[in-house]
Image (cartoon, rainbow, N blue to C red; front, top):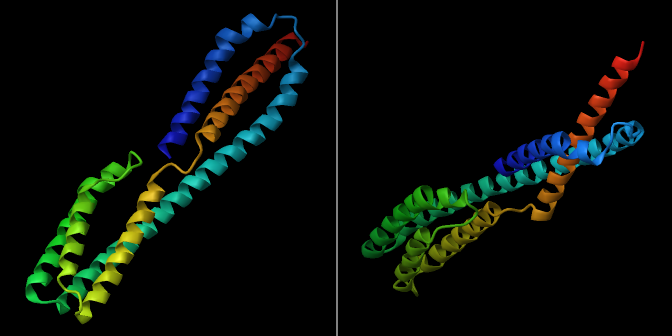
Amino acid sequence: MLLVILVALIALLAGLAANRWLRPRLLSEDDDTGMAVKDLVGPLLTLTVLLLAFVLVTANGSYGKAEIAARGEARALDQLVETAEYAPAAQRGRIQADAVCYARAVCRQEWPAMADGHGSPAPSAWSTDFRAAFATLQGQPVFGMLIAADNKRSDEREERLAQATASILGTILWFLLATLTITVISLESACRAATTAARSSP
């Protein structure tokens, strides 16, 4: 979301700068550009609005999917802790302690890293220790339940991390930047043309 706002601000500044310094050098005062500007503004506004809507909907959808995956991961971790109650005391304490450390690593290290579009290796250290504890439980009834809960946790974490990466192509953002810039230039040109026409009319 911040990236979209940044792109829009850059486009606005670039459009204003281009209209102020570049356009007077390219066009002379007697150029009849009024009709061309009018014809350009409407389609460009439509295209810009459609692109902005697409980018915002995509970003919002990705955020929603990440939130659902995070909740699923938390439920799977809770199920893992509850299932560990059926394990022998030594493995039970180890699995539950690893689950607490895993949850802290996700909250304190991985969530901040997701803001930059990637994960953290810290939670993986504790999930690896889960599997080491599971290995000592092979052949026991609780083994299958623990593996199922851990697989669910792993799948939800992967989905959460996948939604943290940018799902909007860079080319779309650059195209949005270009259309916003041209739209700002066109709108300001139309405003100047209208102002000039109003002053010259009796």
